[in-house]
Length: 497
Image (cartoon, rainbow, N blue to C red):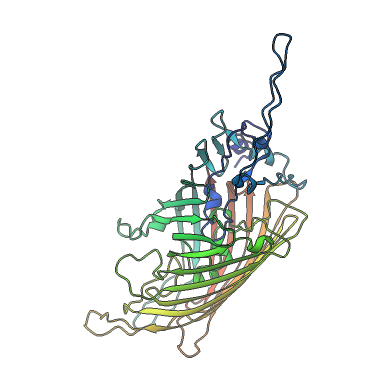
């Protein structure tokens, strides 16, 4: 793919950041790419005044016939104004970044008053004059080509086995639209995420099996230490799941994440992205329906309960991107841990792909995780450990012969992964590696979790950071349920607008 052509497509007219015309305090709406993770981890926006808004417009130059205007005494700040802190200065671009990157990511105004603008990867933002209402609209797609080489499987008297073969697929892995902003006040924010990908809609025989609603929630962030989030959104359990789906280092999340994550659910939580204003501590406490997003209809009283705590020893930063595209020489780190209990989950796991057990029963599980994220000078390191132990509550489903279906044990065990990446200085190229897997642990209740391992690498080309990128990864997959390793190659083009 010719880099010059792509540069022309995504470059903006303005070579630098755009500053709006002075106007009443207008907050930026929640952006699409950033809002992807706002339910799980994005810090609630604080009321800030940009330098452009704090500076009065230049007065007209007096002439012989036009007297100079009298000095204007600044208005006495109101209590609300006093609560508004100056916006932090924009971070200076790293000397290791490509020289064209800053200009390519510049904002572009749509209206002269500055209340409507377009930002790469964020989309169109519109705000009312008072700032009480705002709306951001954007969308993204991931066009993915996958080649999967599956080894042959030996046959039995009941099963003839399978021959060695290679499968190929070209799909829209994800295709989503985001709407976000605030209503009535800057402290009531909303986000809506809809999917149009057949993969995520669970198409089978031409019929969708899942709702297109991924996120639909409100955030009430009037109080820094007690922010309330309510609706359907990503449960803030493990850090890799909380990351923006548009900002992953590999084509997709790790095998361990896909097995042990909680994914989305309906519920509410209290959280603080900056406990006591120290800039180093966060917490989440939530209660959820416990049914996930792939099941709608009557439910029992079994709920899901969650607690998560995070420490950022070097201070706050955007920890929701897996590559260190800022290339800052200042180290950044996040250490997190969480515990969750799910009472009578209708799925065998609480992830997006969790299946309803054949016997129609449910599963109660204790879950715990610990994770780490580190960044410095273009180098990134992410890792996590998972643990799950649970028991099955049998259902009353029967087979074709009218006999009760034997319940399968819960997927008890541990999971883990570690991945690292490095951005080559002065270029948009990144190289990365990953190792991870899961191990079944029978314990008291048995297990149906197979032993699994993944190992591989990735090459990324960032034409406009994560907003426009091309990814190529290779993973060798091992499973105790399959004889021989499986080889997977994925090529993915991602565009956010």
